[in-house]
Structure formats: C-alpha cells, structure tokens
Image (cartoon, rainbow, N blue to C red; front, side, top):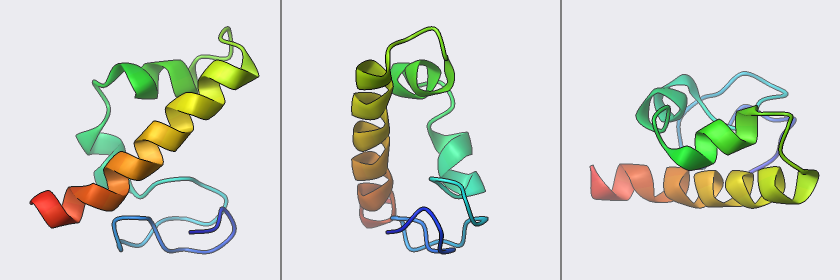
Length: 65
C-alpha cells in the first residue's frame, strides 16, 4: 500500500493522497483509532499508531466480510 497510489489495503480503490478507501472510512468511523487519527490535538506518535491500527484493520476487513 502506498499513500500515492489508488489501492487500499482492503483491495478497494481509494483516492490518491489518502490512506483508506471510502468503504473503510465508513466502516471505521466510530472507532477510537479513527477519532485519534483525525484529531490534530493528539501528538504525532498517537496519530501514527492509530493509522497503523486502521491500516491493519482495513487489510483484514475483506477477509472477514
């Protein structure tokens, strides 16, 4: 997965310069990790950890569904 390409970790299509596709964003919108990732008041370390968790969850999303 690359930030510049259009392939989401779930194998879906995402806009360039984004981390996840729209389906993943909707699936994870209520998770605390998404709230931390989107809140600039948290430190970069917390936001990075939240992003790593979201990417891992996204990669598993299609396998579970």
